[in-house]
Amino acid sequence: MHIVFSRIPTLWIIVFMMIGMMFHLILDFRFDAHILLLAALFSLIACYFHSSFKVLSAFILGMFILAEILAVQPPFHHTLHVSMRGIIKGCIEESRFINDSTQLCIVKGYVDTPELPRIEDCRIQAIIHKQQLVLHPGMIIQCQSIIRNPKIPTLQDDFNEDAFAKSKNIQWFANARSISIIDNGMDSYHFFVHGIRTWIKNAIQRTFPKETQDLSISLLLGEVSGLPREMRESFALLGTAHILSVSGFHAGIIAMLLHIILAWIPSTSLRVLGLCIALFAFLCIIDWDPPAMRACMMVALTSITWSNQRMMNSLHGLLLTLSLMVCIEPILLQSMGFQMSALGMLGLIVFTEYFKSKHDRIFGNAHRISRFVSQSLSVSLSASIMLLPLTALYFDMISLVSPITNVVLLPAFTIALCWIIASICCYAFSFFLAQTFALSAHQTLILMIDIHREVSSWEWIAYTNHHASLMAIGMIASIIALYQSRTIAHGVIVFLASAIFLVGIHDITKALTNRSKPKEITIIERNDLLIMIQGVNQDRALILDRDNVHRRYTDKSLIKHLIAQRSIRNIFFAGAISKQLATAAKKQKPGLKIVAMNRSFLKKCFHAGRVTIQENNSGKRISSIISHQI
Image (cartoon, rainbow, N blue to C red; front, side, top):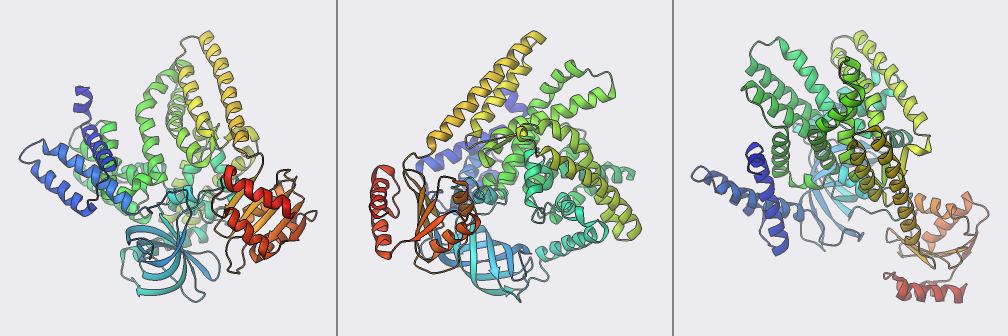
């Protein structure tokens, strides 16, 4: 143990940071995060006098990180969805048009509501409805808004807003009612970066054919908003969705190209300095995306140690990078992109050599092709085995072909991305060369799109279930057991046993899913606007308004859910909003019969259980009212 900690000294920092977090959480301290940060800095200075202050500094840093995370989180249970009137103010980091009159902005600033104390340093996704107002990154704005926390999906077809918010490091959503521009920010850093990104998009749109423009922008800048939903789903099913966002894959290609370009510089120190400056510029252009930031920092640390003729332990470099990132931006701990990047890299460090030794026995290492297959499959499997539980937790889905598709398709995407970068570089001085590289990348990307479209139509390539985490754990155990086999006969036995084991887990998860479905009554709450109740015999539904404000409301996922329930033939509604929903459902399924209920019945149902939805209490009372009235 002492040897491990001496080779990887960052483990001490991680351990005592975690102890500090637990200490802060258990004792429920109310120290201000700024005070804890100052205390940690003084402890670091005190390390000059005695080394024991290193432990104290890591301990206080752990308390600071947890205090900073709690400061931007709503003080209520995460499953509770609330909307409040309030004010948001901050700097626009991203901005794009949803349609001609609606803009979507990511604002870094504070949230101020009457119900809660001011919450600083939040990332808010704001929808702004102003037809003649053009907002750009760098602007400082203040909005009176309806503010809400991310919603957890209640229906299978619901958009997973909670997972989306974590992937984008967003804590709040806002619908702006009025907006004031405090500063145009024309000379700000965000506006400068926005100008560079706009120039790159214009270059791609002018040189690439229309079919691959959005995919090329996504590969280079990580913007997936322009991609069709079917394409995003096909990449997720094949386990190649990480290519669509800027990640360590992109940073690795950039670092490789930079090493080739800077190889002519004789001085090692100048080469490393040029590499670090170029990586810094790359991070600025992609707006400091956490996975790419992690990869670039590790590349820079490794280059600096090599230039000083030293070797750095890979795990030490990873933990040191993650520690620095979390200390600078503690909220990254809740970012899905940061979590997946950290776990994927940890899998590469821990498992690659183990799997490579096994694959060398299978494929051999005498030939160049066999070595390539062994190394590629080992890298893909090492990352996949660590990311299985996380993808199952966030997306309720496991790609069964991810290790193979990454081995087969990643080289093609690597070539395509290199050609895209070459096209952008040539666009500055030669449109002909830029278009030549663009057409080469276009042909490769068209082939990749066709492969994804064809393979994603196969039903067996992914496992989808609300209890996919159990299947992920079972698959990891089966893979490890299979690779522990020493003979072919032993491997066949383990393979058959693992198959039976995974089939058993599938049956268990299916039974848990069926058991979670209520047999007598189902209550679904939607956006504080309406409630839907299915009858005991599953042939009728009651939809009630939960808001007395008349406004146009269309819930596509709920309409799709109603239509998918073939047993429902009658829909009873009470209120203007529920009438809109019932009418929309009838348009898509003409066989439905919709019946209006009176307001007095609506009040009775509200008194019977508007908020409390426990079956043993309000559920029985509501069901008795339904049977009596209907």
